[in-house]
Length: 236
Image (cartoon, rainbow, N blue to C red; front, top):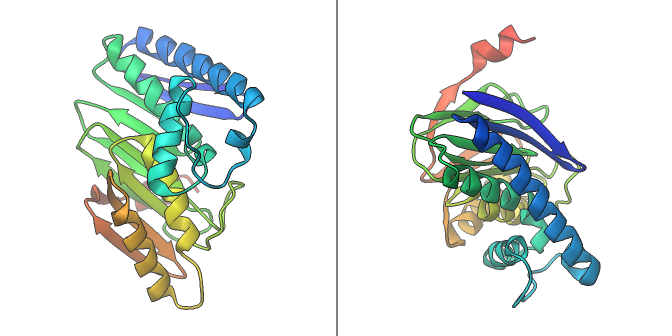
């Protein structure tokens, strides 16, 4: 198995594949689509700034993917950029002959694999961060986590973490932002219910995990939870 770190400006990825060529293809694909997106934004800056979906009838593939996912979730298109790049890279890796292709881009994951993939939940200072994970066995899959407390991404919510599982990472990325935005307020139970309802209302979302004010909710089709406690403690 080949595992490699790769970055271009804000895009910081971990690439995993069963073929060296697939990793190279992933790097080339990410660089290509980043360039396509940057060129498009220069012509249409509202694509970068909008916090609401935009109607897109033209543009490169990455722009159309982001516009479609953000429209389903009801957020701005840039909420799905990390997931979109991960999806495009995995698509290219599989086309190059890889049987295992995993791309983690800033915490958003796209994966196709013939064997299970374990994914850790990272949620800042939450007691569950790094100690809880998921054993993913259904592919293809997109996984994304958004937080209203940790990290630098824009969020109008207050959840420690909202993890979304979807058919692809572009949609999961946009949906995680949308769900996190509604998880807020003094009543954790009501906030979590709003989050769950929002997640399951988005076409293509399969399941979600929400952590808010010491409460944890699981809804929909979520991969098997696994304990990473021993690994977490050993690394301290």
